[in-house]
Amino acid sequence: MGFNTKWINSNPIVTYSGVVNYEIINNSNNVIIGDARFDDMKYQIFDRSQVDKLVITQKELEMIGVLDKNSAVWNKKVKVALIFNDLKIEESIRKYQEIMAQTQWKVKVFENFKEAEKWCNEQSF
Image (cartoon, rainbow, N blue to C red; front, side):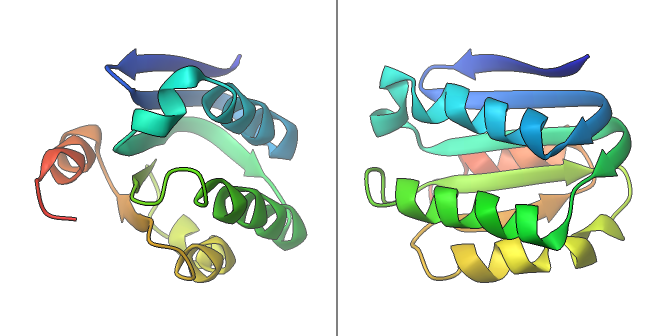
């Protein structure tokens, strides 16, 4: 299937399923970046809990990080919640987290949607 994007006000919630690769992640990012609501966005939730297999190289993760880093110029303060059903994945996305640490965006990994949504809606940035 790939991905589905739902908006809550100006905040996207992207749900992935099945086998997910760089092209699917890049396409979902383009949907968000190309939307007029991007400028008012406070958070993004990427729910990968229904992903059967994540097929992405470290180089591709780095490219996603660079694209997001460049997007942070337009909207400086965004929370990015990443939901994985297997937290061992966090190790593989460390490069993305390192790149995003050079921006004002906050990136955090969660085990479930409820925790991610709670963090995104907290007033503190």
